[in-house]
Image (cartoon, rainbow, N blue to C red; front, side, top):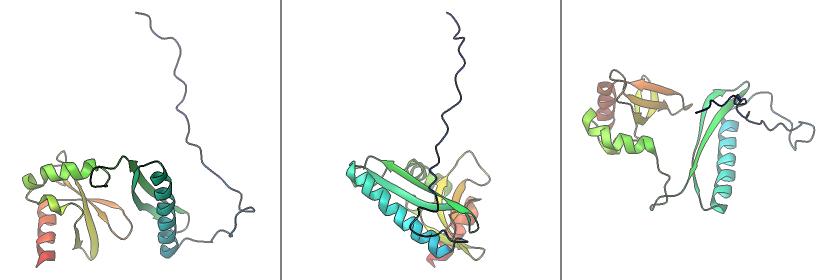
Length: 162
């Protein structure tokens, strides 16, 4: 068997869309504000929903992350074929539902919020490969991800229900 002597080219670069500020309808702000970020998130989510509906798909997400009010933020969307109930399949949710009881939690705890250290967090996943900190959460305020021990999350959830 002969070895392919041609080297693979570099991966295709992601194209960034740049539009001149001279042709924009509104001049750019000096800084972002939390209100502007949320308005942009809603507008982008609406635009994504319009596009996906035209193709018979669904969109989920629109979660902001890496928010830097001086420069920008990241926003993530997931597009897919709708399940029977109209929702988008979530591998993290499916994994959580399977593993939750082994970690002393309920499958319905996925997406549940709790308060810890004066901030609100949302449960997003279980990673059994991290025995010390298997619970993945995101801070609701900015979407930043954190890892928590199971015992702490169970205690926070129990206190929230009381």
